[in-house]
Length: 357
Image (tube, rainbow, N blue to C red; front, side, top):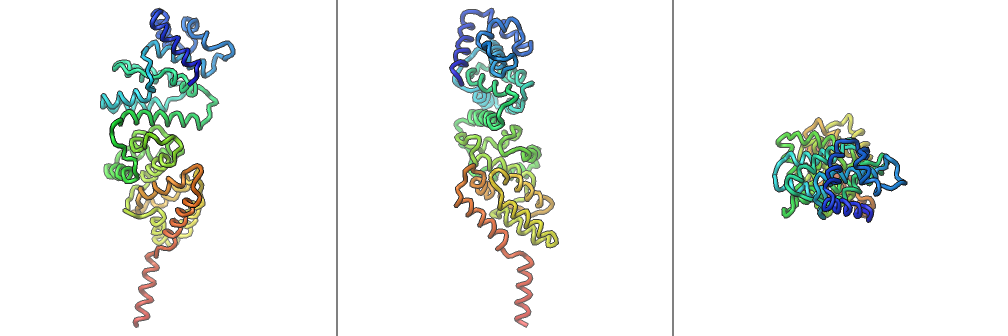
């Protein structure tokens, strides 16, 4: 948010109080390409500034926000995402949540229409929101050269704000066990949500708005976009959707151990995949885990997703606790190498019988 954006919204509020004709012209400008309605230019351009190009993202944001404000002149300290979350909580209408997800998936060509649709819903129930913050967010939306990290952080902030408002006053089951029970319920019902969770693995954990409805309710609102606890839940949700066999108390390393024992001819390839997982960094662990879990897909070998979440909370940290991460890796190595495999049990039994004879 900038002082300039605050002054601009203050200017719009003054227009609403003193010049309803100008507000009507701004409202009608929604029917034109952004920034091209001559009647709106006369009102907004003084704030855009001569130094800004016609396609400047901030200039386009000012024009769009002016038109949207004229459509629903209700400024408040609540963000649009929070207002939308409150609307969903009040109406209990699933289509509102889907409308929000669709909004987050909009590109710069779609955002104007989808924002107008969202604001129409808010206006119907009298919910205002912070137009000053929306200017900054829309300017980023329009920027063709936007930094990916800022773009993703903004969308994830919207997700946190929406679900934080939607579940206000309710206890958030953010513990790994709560997430596990949710995933088990999805798997039991063969929910179509599983397909979306699987597809989310093509993006970094927590960056696919399509799966926000499935995971964000289990995220503590205090966790920021890069928080490893948040990313761990998104990653494991996608992995478990890929292979939903569940084994209580069994680590993924132990599951891979069993796979190697069952596939003796291919055991070395399983081991190579496991070693790649052990050596993975926070930036590469998601891809290596996806490949490792894919090996289990055609088997009934399961693992406990809650345990994997706890490990990923450490592994996915941008600046991990080295001692803690080393401890996790050593435990994974023990689970994979030191647990006796079924063939070892058989060999031990045969040896015992021979000695008895």
